[in-house]
Image (cartoon, rainbow, N blue to C red; front, side, top):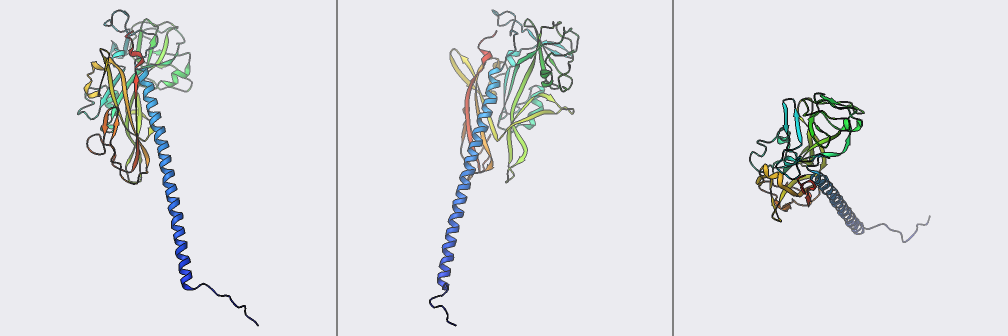
Length: 359
């Protein structure tokens, strides 16, 4: 038998060289994959931040523009006398009082101020322990533009009203308010029963200031309170995930506030409130505006700090962000998290449409 000549295997040196080259190639591929994966995560985080910030600004801006809207009812019966009494009355089981709708249509709270919730109404008191310290809270009141009519006349002592449009009835929760108006007078009442599918009657406590004809309008009364709180979720390092929340005054069977998570990843919101002083706009934080001063607010600067819901950065974020003129640093009072989340700030200014005139 003849053996083929000129055939031989790899030497040990050649084998080692080939292994080293293979390892270097593998390291390069792994490095490229890791870099591309990090780029993908960063790009995805930036996209999510843009969406979070823009939607949060849109939600807040939309409601702020509507602050004080009350349908066809004037803010006072005499358009030439800004001090005349309001046409709107708040009806409760204890009695009926004039409701200064325009004056309380927008209210702000600076949680950095000690005792910020002291003296606030019950809706604010119920959420005070849910709000992240150092963030702002805003409460906005306005009537829905969608309205309905009652199925018949409403007696002053009726205690209930059934609507032609059952959809509106189903949108008003137990504890939320609605407006009954015939354009010459208006009553705000609180619903005391749960909505049912398809509508159903809306019951309320108290006696109306007068009867209303069947051509009266029924509008949902929005008392939208926005705040930043923690969700029940955490990041891999244990950091709580924050979000923008909404509460409307509705409560559950235990009396706890019903809150709705709107946008995860909102870490902070700040507001500055503007008054037109002789043609010059002056902006102040909520802590520097008196309760009476909110009736003169005509513009609001909004600042939103959005943070990624993943740890994307390679190092901790020590950047300072300016929200509506307020600096949010990584340390100190009202600080943002000193972690590897990616952050973006979003700012805008909104004029309050219904503050152009006192009518």
